[in-house]
Amino acid sequence: METRIKPGQRGARIAGLRPETLFAATLSMFVLEDLSPESTWEMSSGAEGRHSRGSLHYAGQAFDISARGLRVPVADYADALGQALGDDFDVISEGSHIHVEFQPKTPINAGIV
Image (cartoon, rainbow, N blue to C red; front, side, top):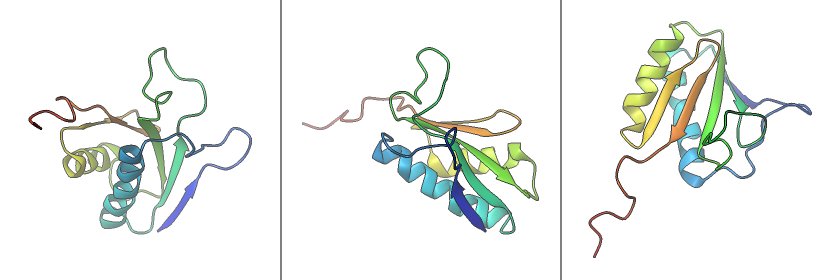
């Protein structure tokens, strides 16, 4: 499987992404490798670019994936990734790409005394 960060002036950047987000990006590569090893994984957007107001991209908590040569439906990849990442992440199939965001449902330090 080929992996890359979208190059060029309008490309993606990993600078500013939170560690949790980078972990999710890494795990997304492994999930894709299992589902469709002949695919190309590409981070098409990180913390840069234009996004909707309040987007977690701006906080370094979201990224977008484009997968080329995928042998399974994009929605299947999104479902498998969502299961692998668990409840602290939202994984949304947006047709041309998958949007992944770190959005914990409970406070990160809940229960620590």
